[in-house]
Image 1: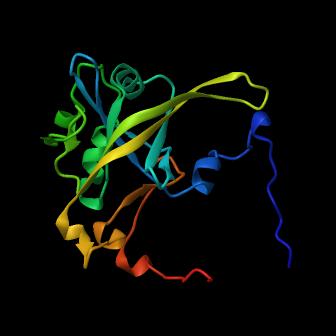
Image 2: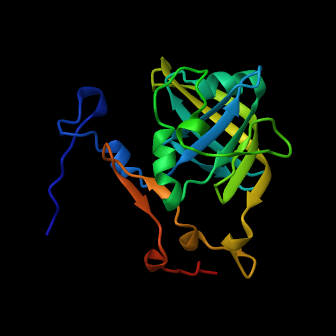
Length: 206
């Protein structure tokens, strides 16, 4: 039996109660980005458009939809840290979503502690079991198919240092399920968490 399809062209609207795009491209890892400006003022903010893009060197990136403090800071310093959001940190991450002035420290909003990075100035989230220290490789303003600019910027960074809590390593292998990653869903308040019972394995063909 063939499925019926809801068809739409984004430029003309989706005709649904909520835009399905985010829900389809997901769940997505959260870009919990710590940064600081040239004067050393710290910012911490989660981004729902985040992922990894390369192995060697490791490159991660996130998109700032609109010009936000993280983008401004990273343009000034060329550095940022990514911090893993896990189930116990979900509410703290949510508190750092607040739209506050640049001089407000989101670490305080989330009742989080700062941990010093080794190779960059922005601090890490001390409670996060995994952090990447990143140096910017590219900042790209997005554009439409007709080349007109979109008010969104893709920030790509090379991971120059990695911090992993030893408890996340099982016989030297990172245990994604045990870490309880939190992932962003598509609904206005939808999140997912990874647990051991969601794990399945497939071996690549040789």
